[in-house]
Amino acid sequence: MLEIERKFLVKSLDFKKKVISQTRIVQAYLNSHPERSVRVRVKGDKGVLTVKGKGNSTGVSRFEWEKKIPLKEAENLLLLCEKGSIDKIRYEVPLGKHIYEIDEFFGNNRGLIIAEIELSSENEIFEKPSWLGEEVTGQNKYYNSSLVKLPFGEW
Image: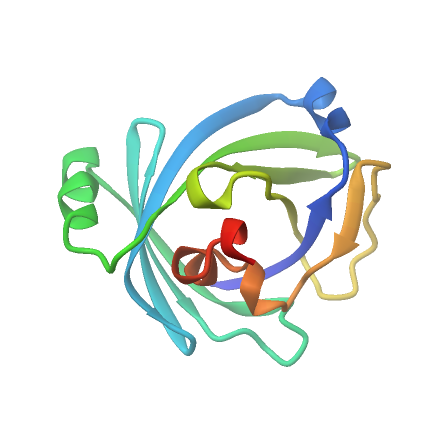
């Protein structure tokens, strides 16, 4: 239940040449407190409920609990969420033994593209493709729970 991931801005659309899957995601928050968040997500035709804890000092590791829920329940829970939502397409791009998850945001966050890579340890070595830009791991403004409140389009 420990999530270890690094986040990067994406500086070109070259990643799209290597995409193996893409899924539309709409999500909102029942609770977006910085110490803990509770997210409801509709990912394609599936529902997911996620609880995340506060990140460690580097922002690389944090507690995460996730549970699949019926699509209809997720859609109903979205109606109870705090104001604002995230609309994005998630692309999966394999590289070496990892898969990058790249989120292209729409709506008030249009123009923002973030790549995430999950690791087995904080010090794990991984390949960095040419389309990967500045690392933003641990920068709160790039968390989805922050982008709901202060969208990229308002920076």
